[in-house]
Image 1 (tube, one colour):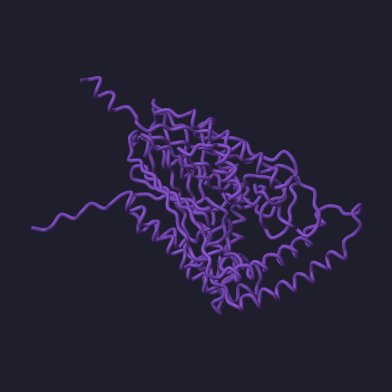
Image 2 (cartoon, rainbow, N blue to C red):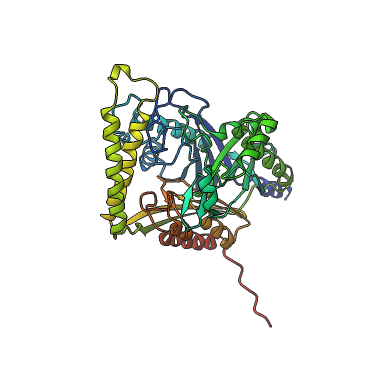
Length: 484
């Protein structure tokens, strides 16, 4: 009888961890920022971290990558190399702009530049990611989990609205902008959701840290880095153990960034007084939140939580583009084509090109190509976009992955309507693009226009309804007891 009781108390959940280095070994094209940036060195390593959960016949693997997004090419390459149709693979990125983009095609910048191709980096990174997954699968051992939440202000909403109702991403540095400023457009979410995993002896092995903040503090730099997650890993391991696994997740944060639109002078002064960089300050704030959570959740460890996975497939209508949008885009294309041709004509001979000579040229080229996106979307009116969402129940918490840079209005709505105590929402589990809110669409501007939004807020609400429905299926509300 005693042996039966002891057997029932053993953890049923199996947990495995692994981490791998995906830092490129040569010069690469860094992602985003509407221009070419050829890397000039490595400031900090890029990592991929895998966390495997198995209970019964269900295996789920989270894979976090210090990348800008998860391209379709990367997902397909990892899936093919791994060749494990029996498990559910949840790839997601921290939205890091100081990393290369693993893809079959290298972006055309309108001029020849020497750097590792995206396809070559895809081959390298996908191989290392698969090794990390396979190691995490082999590392599986009985264990337990605990969860909690705290807060850390590591950034703010990055869109502001003027006296005419027009929204702008960033800015507010010029006097004329300050005079017409009226309000910040959207909400802010400073939650730090934490999931801790423990081995059979109760030792802490790893943490999942979910914050509504993309890792793009140094988004325009020319050095490969993991941005603030590098300093965060260092600070957390200094406090809780050098062998601790750390898996970062970027929650819905399409309209948030690790910057301050206002109060910058006071903020800068405090950093100087503390003798910290902003990345170091972010790391300390995240580590402080982790330190407040861990001691109080440790006694709640659960080795046999409810464990259910659900995949949702949707076909959502593409954003509707008006003829007026196309006409405006054509005007923009003409403007930047003229600038590109002027820059191209002024280029010195190849032997005399030094430094970042290519930046103004490639910025004009990229702006021209970006505006052309509107015409391509206009030509696809009536078509749909296939969408994959992953939902996982782990006891009283839920994980939800989404492919876009999702504005906070959707994230908060999901959290409010969800039946779970805590919700770990994970954006950029796909190729990206903004998914802006109705109020952002009204304000327009970058991040909320046909060139940067593949689907509209109407489709975003359809996605939200599907997620809420799925969460309620994973954790049905108890039926009300009829009154006598």
